[in-house]
Image 1 (cartoon, one colour):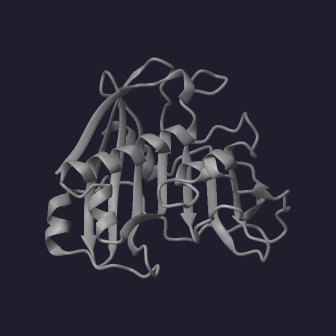
Image 2: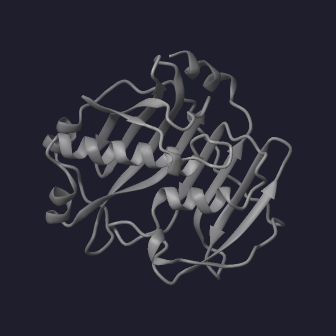
Length: 247
């Protein structure tokens, strides 16, 4: 059982080139998750009453094309697996003609809002989400490596508008902060983000970024050098991931 909704790309979601920005692409996938939760009776109130929350731990997004302002889009999510305290989800974004614009593989963890410990998913909760076939997105076996000599930038203080209902910096906000720090003309086709700890109001995040020939890697870290997030943006696809575009 998956969930799908249609929308129109808004002017406020586009950058100077009049196409959907990377952070708003992530927003659409996040929103689809929330809508899916509600559709199976496990919306925000359900998890709040259970004193638990779903936390995104990593995602890999393949971007084949980005819709322009006013374009109609269809966004879909499918739960792949819910086991223990972990969940896997896939996402797709298609245009009005059904062409695949973007796809994603994501990893989640169910965490207690009281003590931050993992919460076991009940069998009936996993069954409600469904168990679907995963997209053939290549599994990244290697961790994102940030060069030790990557320069450290000025600190970014976490402001209230960075936060979501969990009182943490929202997943898409990290992407927005990162995309504002990299060259504007770098075309992102593969986007990987690994989340390590949650930044909250008043925290200061220090960027470290290394620009390569076909990739940009980096992290947003605390003052001690421990990462909030580690990321990699590539201007290409793996040979396996190229085929996802034809689904």
